[in-house]
Length: 99
Image (cartoon, rainbow, N blue to C red; front, side, top):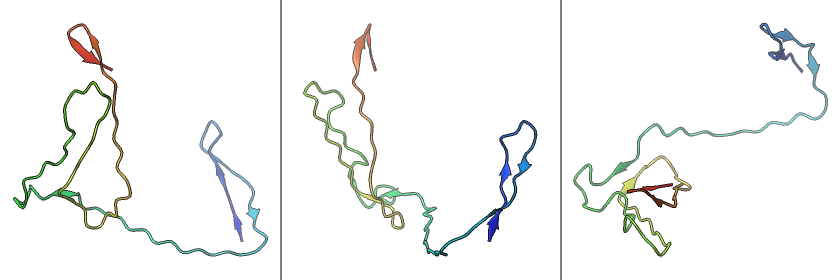
């Protein structure tokens, strides 16, 4: 087999490069993709619980320890592997706190 590449690096349109022929051993792989198009939901939406969606503890701390907790969330088809969150150091600037 071969592949023909459209080179878009030119200034107008593209140029058609000559075919590149394949040689060597043929390999085949199978992949399965699942797309979760349903939004996650919290049990408080249906009235099934009273837990906080996200508990971050005190809004301001001086000791440098922050503990995040979340519970009551469901996303049946997601298979969530991780959560990301960001923490910023705030410093006084005039009458405000800024990054």
